[in-house]
Length: 635
Image (cartoon, helix red, strand yellow):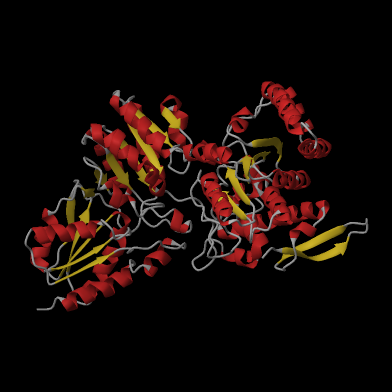
């Protein structure tokens, strides 16, 4: 269902003024150019107002408003397939597809997601939370359409850095060669590719996209198809035109791949975009429309600071300042500690994959610019590059979100671990991350890192432990080392438990509680609540989860006979399963055991406390589960 405009009134000048956005069933194709421009203005106001209260990805969505409106004027996204890359450009699309009222619940528990989600709307063609896959998905949909002899359009909206990922070029190469009718819209906001050069190129690009030229080109092609020898004449003139164009226009890369290239064009001209999309739709082949936009367009604070407003919490619309001042977090402590070590050791280098600010590396990039490398959305390349640096005697650290590290698994095995190279991974956003939801929870790294031979995985639960573990990773350990830490700040636990391996935080005879990282906080709460009911718990905290130091755990379970392991990761190859296997191998018979984790599912979006409660990982839920373990294990 498309969202239409309600409350139109005569402006007194022969035009129509649009008063508000409302959920109706009218088709946006009926909008005039002036009305479409007004819709863009209303959408921007709605986006700024909404995200100021919910938080979210603002700058990217603001920059894509005219593109989204033009798409909805030309295509029916309930039938045609619009694949986003990445999905945080989709807010205007959500408003225009029946979710305007639901924007009040954006990224909230039980509300709509911050990314496209087919379960929300038939107009969302594909889940898109990570980058660079849209063209691959789109060509797959186009081929399915051809094989099934169906009739619908396929579009991929790529940009905002996604073109820096290698998968994008794999998709582009195949899509152009496929001959399948599909449209790739490149949203070039300066985050992906360099500016075109030269005034002549700009002038010719403008001329070849004028309506009269496009009409002539379309008519000429039709005429040549019906005239005797027309096909031969067309091929000769086309070759001459292409040769001239390639010497003057910066579009040979995409045309060499097999695309009809249109652009670059103004991405904030909704009239021009609509016209070009209609033309691209008629071409019946692979088309790449190169659109230039301003990230954060229409909100001065976002235009001036697009990185800060890329992903933002609640803020004051008038000032652009956050409602709650930023709190000290693990990412910042990582960045500060790395700077201190780099001051003393010129072998230390920092690598990021388009996440400089998010991983806390802003200060490092400023102070040690010659040793800082942002490789774009290319996690596999970052890992292989780190391996090359380590092989030649440097000490690289790759700072990466847990969910993004998934892309680099092959390189971890073949480029890093196989040669036992000393590469440090700063695995940010480990565990449940909150409002970004399924696509961003860092719940797989504990499982797959454990499968990498020679890997050491450290799990700080406090800032003090993170500082110590960074030093240990560089100077006390060999081979690949991962330090995984949560998004946000510290919890109740703010100590430094000291050594690597496993440590006992408190003693009790009734139950063994095991956890690591930020999950130690609800486990401590659980133990306190159990103590109020007369149940005394051993708490074993794991500072290292790969390899596991089992002796403190075995010693504890021999005493208590009961075990509960709590962790915010998937069930498969979780730490609890490894502990259970080790206990069995040691010949210890437990009276009762419970492994509390996320199971075999994807977890929705919401605040971390809400999600912990949903998954039975908050202090109260763990207490109830622990009481069950104790009751099952009564003598």
